[in-house]
Length: 353
Image 1 (cartoon, rainbow, N blue to C red):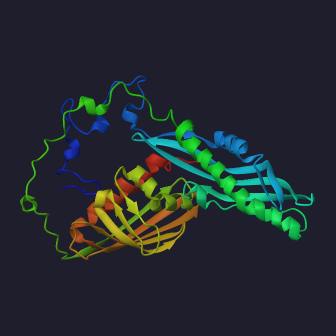
Image 2: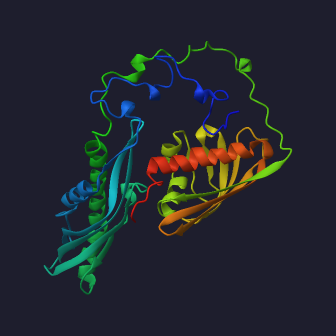
Image 3: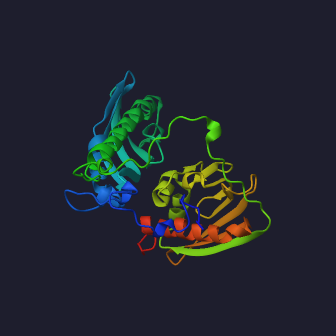
């Protein structure tokens, strides 16, 4: 019978080959102009780190601001630490970036006294909108009332201008730098395929097929799994908790509210639950269920992460699983979560960090 993690039409349908010209369009081999990455299906990645650093330096230097209290201007980007990448999966662009940026600035008070200082931007990340970026402004000399007003000018108008420039970089990254990631095709896949199914005529709701009856819980069992990932614990934790990454490696719809008490839905609604405990990079506790379990019945999943010799050890303990679904749950975690996470993000291969 079906493991039921990604929806499957019938037992063992994964062994049945589609007829020529039929089937899931993701698997149709179309005529490509370059013969690679058919249908843009495979995960492709373009390192955007150096381009991003150079573009940010162009955008953040020589930004000027003035008021009745004086004037100030960014003069130099002293450091940009971090990395960025643009990725394509199933013709969808996904961006990962994280930078800490440091700048110098100079200015003058209303009476012409020189002022200088530094700026730190610690949280440029795809997790934050450009309007949420923190801009910390400091003086390099002793502050007085006049110099403090120039610092406030940089902290308000200056920060607003800096955020706007970082927003320009994000737009350029998405529209210009990544434009060659989705490769051209000679004709749309949809044009090669017949309709998946005839459209049904409108009918009263009462004619719809009744849902399957919930499975009664007569006995429960336990799932225990251990696995190793060639990455840091924080990398595994982020992949399990970030909605975008989960959608990528499960190849299905997911909704994740990554906080204690937050709900999650995986595999297009086949798996649902609530987060009970979250210790960043160390521990995840969930109330977890398949949608066809008896209403109100949840298992408890505990995932523990630890670092050992440059790798991450994962231990999963799941209790109160209906005995008929113990193997289904075990194989789902192993095949559709952990193995796919390794394959998509390269966590089965040793990388220096």
